[in-house]
Image (cartoon, rainbow, N blue to C red; front, side):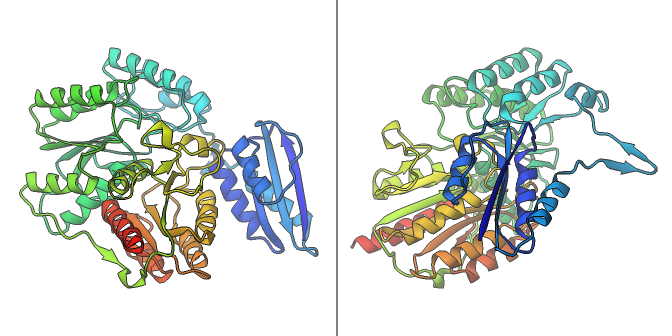
Amino acid sequence: MKDHVELRSGAYADSVTLLQVSRAVQASPGVVAAQVAMATGLNLEVLEGMGFEVPASSPNDMVVALRLDDDADLAAALGVVDAALAPVRQAAGDTTVAPPRTTASALRRTGVDALALVSVPGASATVEAMDALEAGRDVMVFSDNVPLAEEVALKQYAASRGALVMGPDCGTAVVDGVGLGFANAVRPGRIGIVAASGTGCQQLLALLHHAGASADGVGVRHALGVGGRDLSAAVGGLATREALRRLDADPDVDLVVVVSKPPAEEVAEALTRDTQALGTPVELGLLGRGQRDLSAVAEAVLLRLGHEAPEWPVHGADNTGPATGPLLRGLFVGGTLCDESMLLATEALGPIRSNIPLSDDLALGDELMVDDHTMVDFGDDALTQGRAHPMIDPTLRNEQLARAAADPATGVILLDLVLGHGAEPDPAALLAPAIAAARRDRPVPVVVSLVGTDLDPQGLDAQRDALVAAGAEVHLSNASATRRAVQLIEGAAR
């Protein structure tokens, strides 16, 4: 084989485009491996891990790294790169309609009630969001890696104008029944959700949708994501309060659910007082030690609406043999799902090391796998700089899956797979072969929480069946999946 690495100085494309370019090139004849990416620190580590030697570069350089068979045509492979990067414009009849070049020009094309969605690199997101707020629009900031101080400034300005900032790092929202970001497709109803959590919101959407198949009136009208830091001490719930005010004023909302990653204690206390003053009943689902898991929150919502919770489905239980070692390894694309699993597993197994630890003393360094129980959030900002979110690009997680399975200390691998509009079109097509390969030499149990609905574009049943065929046990409830993984580890310890 032969390697080719070149830098394209000053060239730029977003991480999703570059992921698509990489996949297109890798499908070309004679190409063994391909990575086309911006030269961020994380991407350089990935390239070095693949064995590529990258010359001195800056984050403003694009790296084209190809590994080819000896007889492969390098010029043809580079031609695929160039073709995939060629700019595309929307054609309308005999004319070419150019997209707006600035946020201000985009706002001029929309009505005054339009919601602005910002999805640019985090360093540029605040300027674009502020333009939208100054134009009188609410804004959803999909971008991650936005500095905390800038989030506070945006939300303080929005509060002064009665506007709503959803995010930063707001991956999921449903506005008047319309899904945004990674939102799942769900049946409409009269429930409103405020979510300081993306995948936590998606877990609720999936569970409530499943229950609604046999329970009339269970559906979601709005799910307003506010960003995972909104209930931190620094932000103080600025967007959560505005979202609650709006849902309380909506005559088509009968019940509000607030879901969050573990909040700051003082902010949670203030939020509890605020919700008691609302006219609309509120169910709080704030993760933390001693608090309910998300499945229990969904069950409480159903009870309020007069329905019993169903049995949350499990498939592939026959695949799962005994734990093959003493350690639990959790590999997540969802930060809130990772939080929930750590909280549940800690109660039974003791401390869990993580890149998003429950306490600072449990933080992982650059090495994501150590000789302890570990859970890693691959959607954390530090692991998405210059890369698409792992719900779009699972490369890093799949590599870690192979490492975990090869470690004789690994007893059980716990994963999530999250469906939705903006996610990978067929994520099981990438994860299922990785699971099968990981279990080929050593039948390590793999337990998966599959978060999605039967209306999602990926097809819930097809995704589940592919995972089961690969040897996984698949749960709709992340809490259920975690308890099953813990049970297997505890069984091996006896």
